[in-house]
Image 1 (cartoon, one colour):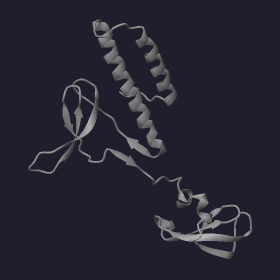
Image 2 (tube, helix red, strand yellow):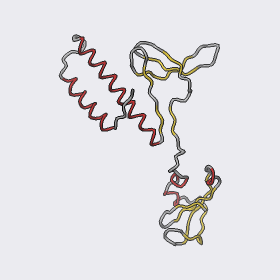
Image 3 (cartoon, rainbow, N blue to C red):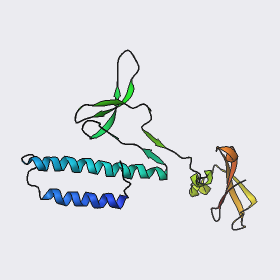
Image 4 (cartoon, rainbow, N blue to C red):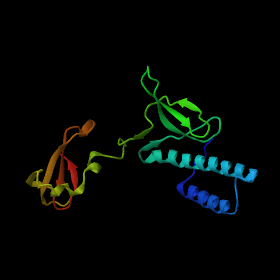
Length: 176
């Protein structure tokens, strides 16, 4: 079970771990210390995994995989089998356990969020581009000054092949 942690929770945990490990003189000579360090390492990975999973709200999607035998973090690797094409697997660097990844995509950035519009992707400095078309008679909806640059952008749905206008005075953007 993964309990959701905030980034501040993870920072407090890491700070506490750092200060508690300083007091352990030699972790290899003390069996309980070795167990403690491995347990803390697993806890840290669970906390970080939860933080990464909570980042999906901002448009990224990252999933961490843990070994079923030793609970260490598994890393994506490419397995070449000679006869067949290569496939994506997750492999534990600690014990060598491997499992099929199933989905060949391990990291995805989604730019399709409902709150994002094609207008949010347009850089405000585009008004300085001398190669863009200009309309000196088009009035801005925001400041009511005349003069804008415009270009055709490729978007989805209603914004497909739309003309994007930007005021050269206040840099207000609109679809026309």
